[in-house]
Length: 149
Image (cartoon, rainbow, N blue to C red):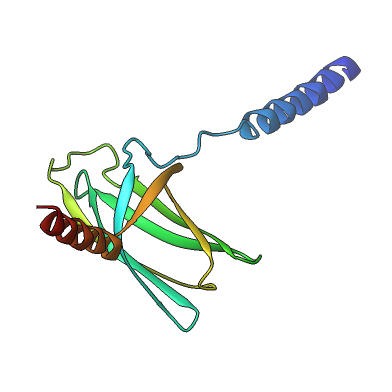
């Protein structure tokens, strides 16, 4: 009788131990898909009274993707700013139309005019191309060609 009581107590403790072990197994977390990448992004940049505004359009591969943006300003002089762009596939494994979706973005942050600014898209460094500089380069190139010819 005593042995059966001890065996029953041990079995209960063993079941409790197995249950604790099973429920503490790390589960796979849903990690957003980061399966597409862009190498550069064209932006319009404005700077007024210590505040930057970066805006533009990013083309996502399907309407099921969403875009999140964030500016991380590291306090130093000059400040180091990282513009984070992250996408997530919200289709949940379902069907999604294969149509490119243009998504506008706007990031506003405070930093000095000398700030060092870089960008990261889905964990990869990307180049920032200022649209105003592109226009200025085209104007210089066309006027130079006029004088050369």
